[in-house]
Image 1 (cartoon, helix red, strand yellow):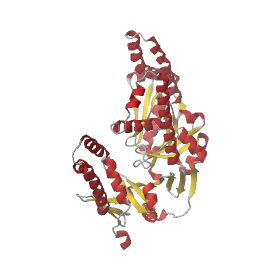
Image 2 (tube, rainbow, N blue to C red):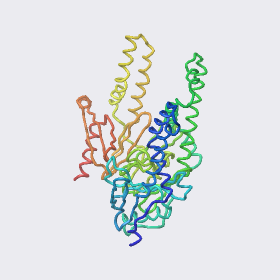
Image 3 (tube, rainbow, N blue to C red):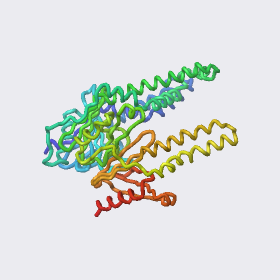
Image 4 (cartoon, one colour):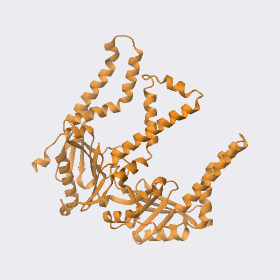
Length: 467
């Protein structure tokens, strides 16, 4: 008991992590100081003094952040003290812990430590999750065992690991190639060039882009796009290499990463729903991705309340893999299509957006080629109609929507927090409804223009759950 009540500090390498964090937070300030220094021609000591003061502050703040941060494992909760000038005390009951993840960046791996993220229930939007920046692997495993033991009681099991899924090397490469992160890399490159334009002579590049040599400009832009695409492939490859899902009793553990290894542990009871996403390119090869709607934060640095379970898996293997993790769910592709008279309404929606542009350019600018935009709009509406659908079972509701990326969400009856059936006047005449289902705050799924009888059956099914 004394060992559990003893206050502990992080590994000293956390000082470097905190210093790096301060430098990142003050990057804009450092850039402004460098610009100010560039304009001065006086005493070098005076010119560079602000920058040295900023670096001194980052080092001092990093050290004090480590010095003032202590944590203590108690019988039923964790007690944390932190703060440089204002000491903050925080109690985290083990029963409110929703997920635990471990990650190890380059700094942590050099020191042989890991970073532990603890996600709690009821966390405010502006309240950070619990982050232990640097603890030993043995200490991280000890913390996870203590929390899981308190949550699981006597049902906690040390052994019995069952490897559910492992992402193969070829699938990892295909995942990286078909990822859509190239435009994000391009944006980052653009931001970098704009920030450091004063220090790097890009005048020749600007002059080159302003020339009438269209071929050279196209080649340059294509080269930038290819470099960004290659960087995106490398980043996704390193992130999802060695992706493994292991089931242990009532807990799922997801490990991933090559350079920065990460381990995420979450209770199966925290899962509120299952989402299957089909992107256009991967759909052609029969691949999809599976996400968990998780009652917690973004444990894998993704969207809030979403946890990636299978980043790339064959669609035919999804039902068996999901059943091995969640026997209560029935993942299938037999959804009830929308009524035929809903097709026209789906086609009209994108036309409402395109037609004002087409009419304006046709009437005032006499650009009749914009009339061709009508055909892609009709295709988008038709595709959205064909992909949408609902499926109602005794214990489960499935909703599917989308046109470019198709998403199907499977929700158990007892997990649905609210269900809304709405109907506009136009829908009322067409005997159509919109079905909204919410499994947790901020996560809402809907399908538009469902048959009125089908929507009524879904609503009565949900009321039976409440009764």
